[in-house]
Length: 105
Image 1: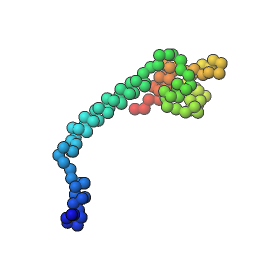
Image 2: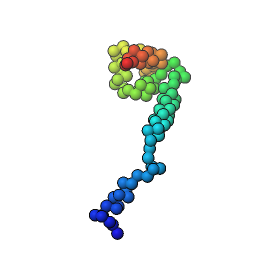
Image 3: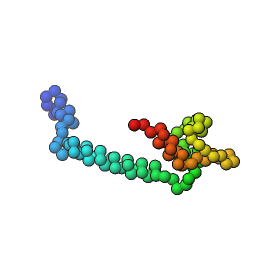
Image 4: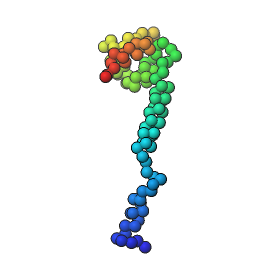
């Protein structure tokens, strides 16, 4: 049977037990763990490639840009390239320089 205006069911849902509480320290620990995990993931994905020259698809993936944006970088001279046959290659060190030139902060 429900007591006092049918609130016993609601009160049970809202009860907080001591072992369910999170402290500021718990959140700080979680934050630090997440930061370390993200740093590890970024280190794995941003590490320098094993080759000096990258194809367009690799550059787009590395920079997270579209085909059109990459074309604009070529056209306006922001990113130098070499074309062999129908394949465009980009020097990895030039990509790093582009990032450094456009660094905010």
